[in-house]
Image 1 (cartoon, rainbow, N blue to C red):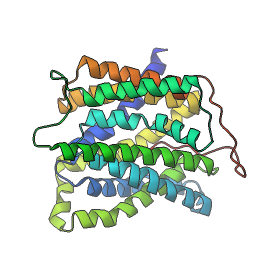
Image 2: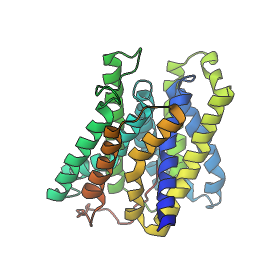
Image 3: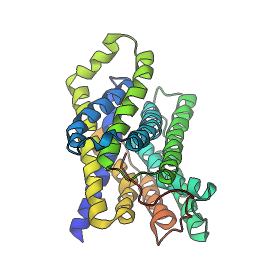
Image 4: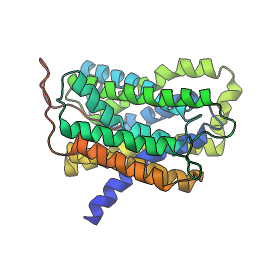
Length: 317
């Protein structure tokens, strides 16, 4: 039992660390530039693995599926999330993003793929209370988590981008699940990283048109952050996710995300020195409980999608 808990906690810590590391990196480098470089480096790291599959990754359905995932999950979801990191504290952003399974469930209900019942509704309410506890409460003051030098409008914009990125991920998950293909997750993740990087390059050039603005990527601390995001997160977290799915099954493996809010708080306190209050810890626990009740507890009823074949390819972002 202890080993299982360790595996799930390890994956959650690695996943959450991406935003904590990103928070430090964007102090020197534009977040869109950071992501564009990260995705392209990640795709280069994945290339040897996809070439072992005898060019199966060049099949049109795989390329199309991965490209759509790259736009929705990488360019929009992570692009908006890392832009939000400029004004939103890392632990709060992790909490918001951790509610992606909840929003995915809501979108699935609204689109008719899943049904709503009292259990799901209860979980939704518990999650909302938990998010309010983490995102609104400031340790020691009981007020919003604004930082010195950050205006209220900047904070609202940051929260809007964080929520928008999470919604994009939720819609992307439902869309891709309904149009899934029988493909290797490694192949899909390659195209997802490559397309996500290529889509963000023009925006990165617009936001940072001068070469000197890109040179910060060569600073040792920023370079280490890029390599960490590209190698440890793009490759390491993905292979950890595949191992959890193989070992425990997709539904049980997904429960690892229940730990993300608490992992984000711990990492932010250890690495960034963020203050954590009892209310925030309680909120993180409530989010995990709400997600368990609404998304993971029992078997959810999923309505069939006409004309689609079962056996979706599920990848980790």
